[in-house]
Structures are given as C-alpha cells and as structure tokens.
Length: 85
Length: 387
Ligand code: FES
Image (cartoon, rainbow over all chains, first blue to last red; front, top):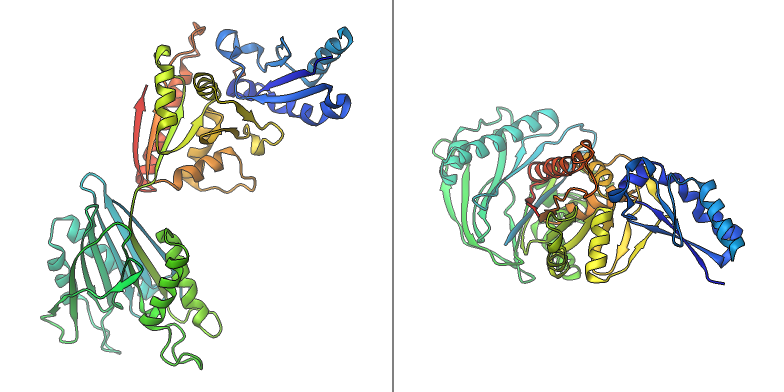
C-alpha cells in the first residue's frame, strides 16, 4: 500500500484562518499511523487564489482537499483513505 | 566601497551616563559620511553635555557647508577651559570621508587614531594647526586615501590609558598595546565588522584594568572600507505571469544574499526553477509560520504576517524570547548594506471580491515602511522595484 501524504498549508491565508492549530498533526499522525502517513508543510497550496477565502485553512490528503480543515476532519480523511486501501 | 562604521562604549563605572559622545551621519546621495568622537572633561553628566555639544556643533558646521578644518578650528578656539584644571573642556576627533576612500581627519586632544592597512599600521603625515586663543591646543589635520580593506580606529583616552598605574602595566595599555591586540584580532578574523572590532577594543581596555571596571569613559570607533554586502528580497508574484521565469532566474542568479517572503512567491520560484521547498511545520515560533528551506536561497518565510512583524522589530527592537521567522528576516536585513526588494504586484486572479486587492496595497505599504526604517534608522541603502 502506498504511503499517504498529508500537506498542511502554511500560507498567509490558511495560517490566519487557523492552520497553526493543525500543527498538532505533526506529532499525532506518526504516533497513530507510524510511517503509513507522512505529514508535510507547504508554503501555499494555491487554493487561496482560486477559491473563496472563507474555506481556508486547506489541507490535502493525497488528492483530496480538506477545506476549513481541523485536526478531526483531517484524521477522518486519513481514516477513510486507509480503510478504502 | 562601503564605509562600515560603528562605535562601542563603556561608561566610567558608577557613573550613569557616558562622558564620551559618538555621532555619525551618512549622506547617501553624495556617498559621504561624517563622524565625530568627543571626550568631555571628567565624567558623568557634565562630561556628557560637553562631549555632546562639541560633537553636535562640529556636525552642524560641516552640514552647513563649512570646511571641516575651519569648523574644527572654530570649535577648538571657542571651547572653554576648565577653571580648576586648566585643560580643555572636551577633546575630539572628526572624520569626513567618501566612498572613494578620500578621508579627512582632524584631531584635537584625543589619542592619535590608528590606521591599519594590509595587516600593518601606517603612521601618516599630518599638519598642525595651533589655536589662536589657547596655546596648549593644537589640531592635527590628515588627508588620506584609503583602499578596500583599510581601517581607521579612533578611541578616547579611556582606552589607551586603561590599566594606568596598575602593577603589571605602569603606563597603561597605551596606543601601542592596543595596536598589538587589534592586529592580532584582524589576523584572526580579517573581515571583522567595525561593530565587532570596536567592541573588542573596549573589552580589551576593560580587561586591562585590574578590577575589570572602566576607570574612565571608554570608547572606540572603527571605520572600515569594505565591499558592500547585498541582499535581495523577493515578495509577491509578478504582475505579468509570463515573466515569472525571467524574474525567478534573475533572482536565483543574483550574487546577493537572497530571501523570499511569501508562500506563493516561494512556490513560483520552486516551480520555475525546479527547486524543492522543505517546509518546517513542526516548529512555528511565536505565532508566525516557521521558515522553510530552499537550496540557493538563504531564507524563505511566509509573506505579509512575517513582513509586518519584521517591520515592528526593526522599529521597536526585538523584545520577544522566541526567535521567530520575523527575527530571522530582521537579522538577514541588518547583516546587509544594500538591500533590494523585488515586489510582485499581481492581483490574485480569482478575486473579484472588492476586499481582496487590498492585499497588494498591504504588501506595498509594509515594504515602503520597512524601507524607510532601514534607511533612516539603520542607514542602509534600499531600493524597491515593483515587478
Ligand atoms: S494560503 Fe493556504 S492555500 Fe494559499
């Protein structure tokens, strides 16, 4: 099975909209899922340009975009991915 | 050449103010600089006022267009004499120089400056002008041509007389003693900044005192001709998207130290030049996104929030405990002499929302403000280019 990649946006809009609280994932994810899931930061996912700002912060879980991301929503998405294999 | 100048001072112990005064002013359009180091008689508030007055007067004269020699002569002839001790109220050294390396120096009463070139001390010739009004006052006037890498070290007698009368150094550190330390230090660290060398000299002087307490006001000013250090900051995506590649190349090929402030900007450079970005999310200190890493770029930070915070630090000083990305950016700026901003002025495509173009105004305004502070408070050469 391929490794799942989670990207957390650290850009201005997402940071202001609460991405800093998503940093919890950095410790939480590896302790739960080991090396099945990798968490990365990115300078800007470029969704802030194209979509309405009200949906920041953005996180991607592989090809899925999590809008208004929270720790719970991201974990949910990871779980879904994992169970779908 | 860039003139790197700085002064370090220690006040006489148990005094609460400095009796030496250092003043310097740069005239960027003309590429000139004037600096004055003045030592007021005695110590504490009285000395401070005398020294400040002398230095300020000299600067004002020269600014008003008076020839430096004449200005110094007027000051020398008019400074009062202490009734009790029959010596001048304050002594001074003035240096007036330009980026070509032409230097004029006038000294009255201060220890003779030290001219260091190629790791050696040069003792230049001077002419003496006697005071019309006071027979024990003379000015020494020097005209020099300095080269890249040359330094001039000025100090108050607190440095040269440090340790005077102590058991191991009856005559104190003296000029010769200081020279030995300076040459040794420069040999060890040939590119040492003026600020560090001046601090070093003051430390040497204080360590020479048996009890490590400054017996007199102790000041050292260093002037150093060196190549300017350039910095380039890229912030915001360019207005013409088709030029992204051109600008990205220009940025990466520049010889300056480089910083990127902005996520979209970092992505753009990464995409155009195929350089991966490593983003550090684990530690974002002090409510700012942490710095990222990119090969060939010295610093990568988030945009608006970091720039705003950096401007605050530049304006009011860094008081926080946590060294965040804005602190890093401040250090980056302050360790350069000539700073260029490439400010992208592109609107976000999808924004028809009237609130959003504001972002560009914010960026422009922060950069404008930051540039002004860097110029006025830190005497940097700054240029801003909108792209
Ligand atoms: S700031 Fe998060 S998508 Fe741009």
